[in-house]
Length: 257
Length: 263
Image 1: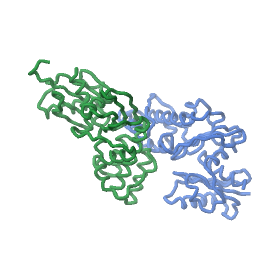
Image 2 (image 1 turned 180 degrees about the vertical axis):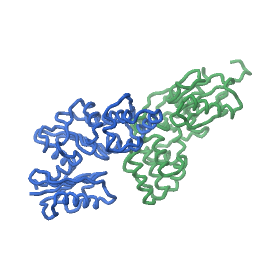
Image 3 (image 1 turned 45 degrees about the vertical axis):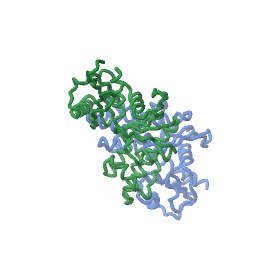
Image 4 (image 1 turned 90 degrees about the vertical axis):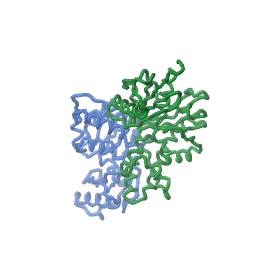
């Protein structure tokens, strides 16, 4: 049985093709202006990578911010349920999931069977979301891909005292004018962002294992700062892009019919 | 004080975005100045004070006492003491509007709601300086993407026919929304009105958390934006008493000068 999961997020569209619990192919693309086009493109790319045609797919589950726009789905599921499903599939010991996307952050608590117990969702404030990093990468003139590595260690320990993206950006500009090293500024930014996510996570009780997913989990600087802030050893998906976790969960749900 | 000797006092309020100076004689404002704050509070303070002194044809030596206030108050070299901006706004508002019991002060990077008793003493206050939304900074960001001076946001919004709605209060998300509306060629007036309403919504949250008593007055630079003032009145269902005698952005400096007068 071959199934497909499609997660249409605010900044990227993701798709995963699954055959009997094995990932055949996955794809991540930036969203286009038209969400339907984003969904069609990412699904087409994923099918191509798996050398399959759509008629071979027995079920498609759609999820994410733009789930209503995904064509030809058998059904739709909430991102919370899909993330829980995806993370629990790889880590049956997962009890907490921290998912940071381009424009939101979620903290999800699971029971021992992988069912969602509780969750906290932030899409009201850009602090603690991927947008924070995008704006800071712009302000510092570094690429989003490299920034994690660049800010991994610091020579001078700086502090960003604001969590608000707008105010923090002003602080970054001042630090740049003071000729501080970009790596040191990034390191301070990661700690500031980790604190923000940590406060959100602490509105729930954090139980081990804690799995970090979403595009921001690929930023090693944030990943380590968050581990430190929470005082836990974070895990992510083994051998898989953590950004596709929601789509993976959707594909797993499609297997269940 | 010996009669016949002039007692001239001053107040200097160094905020995050603007430095203000007021010179008073016999509790009357004789000159004032508002300048944009630079990176160094001491220099911004001096610039504002020099400008006010020049307007009054005075020098710093003529000032019997100067009180400093605002974000950068500890850095002002020529003041004899500094007083918190909360107390100064209370003092200034109570002097100009004796019936004032609540003050909404929106500055460049913060928003404060202050409650006073009948004598103008501070009862309690709440501040938002954590989130740019609901502060002058929100309006600055939106004016910048609209490519209009922030001072025009209020007047422009008054001719709105079909105001836009901003889904989010966060400055970052609202900015993206505003850009989308600009690209859809919505009239500037409609966008301005939506921006002012979003701003007022955020401020009303803070005001409602406090519970406001009449009379309510508004101070700080944003009080000059009629669009925000009207939207705030509409949302709170309460009238805001306009400060007519002076520029409401000078209120903190007026309060500081009044404290200087009492010294």
